[in-house]
Amino acid sequence: MSDDRKTQPAGTPERPDRAQLLRQLGAEEHAPVSIDGALVHRSLRPGDAAAVAAILSQLRGSDIAVVVRGAGSSPGPSNPPKRADLLLETTKLSGVDDFDPEEGVIHVGAGTRLSTIREAARAAGWELPLDPPGTSATLGGVLARAAVGPRELGFGPARDCVLGLDVVLADGTVTRCGGRVVKNVTGFDLARLYTGSCGILGVIVGAWLRLRPRPAAVKALRASGFDRPRLLAWTAEAALRGTARAAGLVTSGLLPGGSTEEGCLAWVEFAGEVLAVEEDANATFRALPGVEEVEEAAGPLREWQAASLGDRALRARLHAGTGSIETASAALEEAGFAQLVYPGTGTLYAHTRASALHGPIKILRSLRERLGGDLCFEEMPDDAKADYDAFEVSPDERQLWSALKQRFDSEGRLNPGRGAGRL
Ligand SMILES: Cc1cc2nc3c(=O)[nH]c(=O)nc-3n(C[C@H](O)[C@H](O)[C@H](O)COP(=O)(O)OP(=O)(O)OC[C@H]3O[C@@H](n4cnc5c(N)ncnc54)[C@H](O)[C@@H]3O)c2cc1C
Image 1 (tube, rainbow, N blue to C red):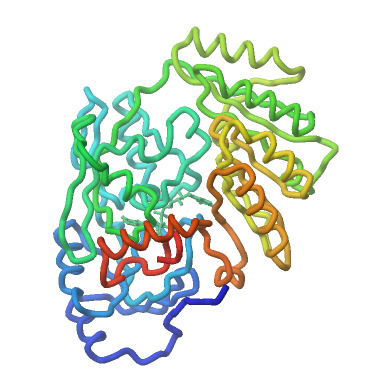
Image 2 (image 1 turned 180 degrees about the horizontal axis):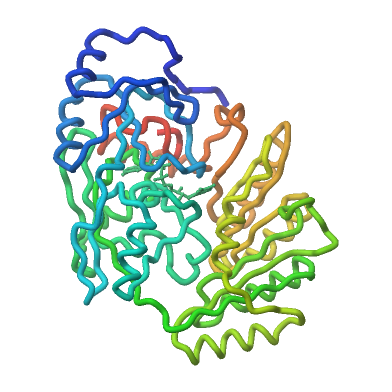
């Protein structure tokens, strides 16, 4: 595959009209910031949706490319920007604007950290059903990536908690889809489209979220010292229980030293009504010798989800589906991949290190072809990013994304190149 990136090398003189326009907008000039290899020299931090709209409408007709950034914490799946002239930071679009503690419905700015939303919810007896790795992630970054954590088993995908989104389109139009009322969406649900679109269709400026009641009881269990098939069966069975909220297995190749002697590690978490949690935890506890009750299961799993094998690491996320997870996991073990497996959602994170990625990627692709599902690359060496699209989309999917990009951002201004199919 050829490298179609057109990053702007440091020191390239800008066209005067472009520089003038950026100055007029009040863009702060600073030392270059690298966004996946594309250098940006100017930033803006608008304070509200109207300011985002004013910026984007003034850019209409220009060739200025805007890269959107929340906390900038995500090493998750994304392609490098093709162009990057202005960094639009969302951190000032932050705060809880509206909260109905009776209904568990909240409206927050897209630049708000998940930790802030989580605290506000918890204080009123609710919990935020989003738990991706990382402590500084913003709501906009998480929704743009559709990022999830181990509790996806209990919470569902990121889009499930979104009741409505406020989005500023590339031409500066302020839009709202959905709203605070549950199920008020008729026709095509745009909020679902924006969630996971990597910011290539619009800038998310705010969201209505549906919270969940805090569970009356939570129990966490940990099992160790068994091989992968045994622990996978244990976690898969636990994941089927009514109160299961997280269940995951880490294979020995991911553990420090890659020890095979200690076998694999697995955690499960149950949450809900006291008696139901007790029943599920007891049955799972008895299903395997040596299981121990622990303080936390989701925390360690979240850390393993963000784990990296370091230099020249490849981390791929394969959503094979619950019916194929055992086959996928066995095939990847045979091929030498370390793994984090969430059998309850059918998701698997495959890790390897290689000087040449062609071989491991061929294995992952053929597995995806055989089993179906989605494949994306969450981490890969910088020098390989030109050769592999982070999102393994089919020609049909690429065509669909291309049509959407054309419809939503015909000038190709927002996050150009970062999305599926390098759009
Ligand atoms: C070590 C570590 C590893 C992680 N690994 C993964 C992973 O592999 N996969 C995963 O999904 N998550 C992962 N995460 C979770 C992380 O929480 C999310 O990826 C989240 O996107 C980060 O939020 P952010 O505010 O830092 O986003 P940023 O890094 O700032 O942005 C992420 C993406 O969202 C876009 N974006 C940000 N804000 C907006 C907005 N308001 N409107 C439109 N687009 C926007 C950006 O342009 C960019 O493409 C990881 C976190 C950590 C700390």
